[in-house]
Image 1 (cartoon, rainbow, N blue to C red):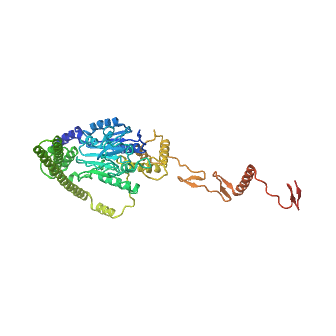
Image 2 (image 1 turned 135 degrees about the horizontal axis):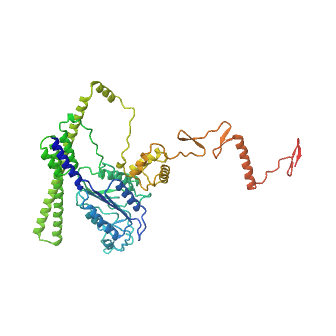
Image 3 (image 1 turned 45 degrees about the vertical axis):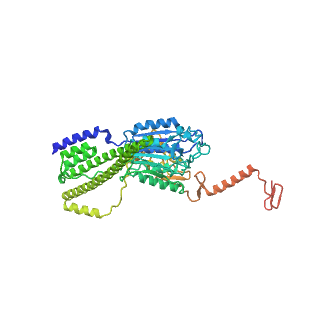
Length: 572
């Protein structure tokens, strides 16, 4: 058995390190247009695009291509180049912020050099949304387009209509993607406009960067949370909307961290070697790996698990093939209709397209069934491991130790240790909040803990830390490396800065105190209270002399400037 396990280990390890397709590939194209040449400049698309680019990079995307203020040719070239990255990608995202326009139900993204004197100029000067859908089509698992582009159309007032009946709509038009696992997110639902924002980001993008890359968060929930934030920020005047659909499984841009179960004592797990080989096959995750495992272990609990894993992969491959056949059949049906083919040929193509679509739906259902079976089998595996661990602990624990353990379980803990999330799992607003918490801990920040990176107080605090810690440079964007540098400091870094009327005591600034008969002046010095009154009198005399105030009328019993005192006599 040990020899077989070694052989399996060697073969599956070779699979693990030689198959580049095992790792999930995520790519993104981010475009932002602010500096329009023929209409008013937009304030925030450039900031929005940079924030989204930083969010996706921090989430570990393999490719994040950022393009700012691009003209028509540059936009077409960016899409063409990005299509090469999508070819072998599992997840593909295109984000666009700027002006968008809808003409006769077709949505266009407007480059910065567009003139759009006539409605038909959009065909040459703008890029249709359909082209982006075509570019991201090859992605295997998820195709996502995010448009923060439903702002007011500045071309609408001057644009000439070549045909009176041609409609130029408000906002963008509703879209229904034909490919599965495709989502199109609008900053505002079809036919309405979105706000550019009063701050450095639009309400839509500001909300998205908080939720989009949270580890393990389903994409639909992320957009739902963002929608709630936008409605709140705009007093229900702007409602983001999503078009398209996904399957029943959660789809997260950043997977949840895997939690390994506690080890099981091999003495109480008769299938320890089989278990190890199963976990290796699971890491490889290909049909060939499961076939090899089943040929080595054809029977038993783990064989059933392996068969469930293989069935799931087969169902996914069948679903992809059925989806492709349905797409080709639909395209053939459309082609025959456009070319005016014979009715019999069109009817045959329609029947084939219908059959292909039914096969695609059946493949989707089959995949869902196999995934449900695998999930149930995995729950059984987890329960089996739990029972084995409990048995192991009970057998090795003497009676007295067991009694002490029982008493410990019944006694509530006095203190709960909160372990911070690993920095590599943080991004967006959550990363900014953690950085501010750490800056405050090391004495460099005294402001509010929030997710706003662009405040002057935040920048000043970062510069204080960099100077006190002798770091190389201040980060322009929030990074996990900077958070790790902060967490690596166990003691205060920035010196305590107290005001003129304060002193340091036990690491805090407290108000100065003076002895009896003394009081603090504006400079923070203790002076006698009588001296303070004399000083005040001298200040008033000096003020009167400077302002040349008229002298008060002489009191009774005086002549000119000579004061007569009955007791002392005249005094000049």
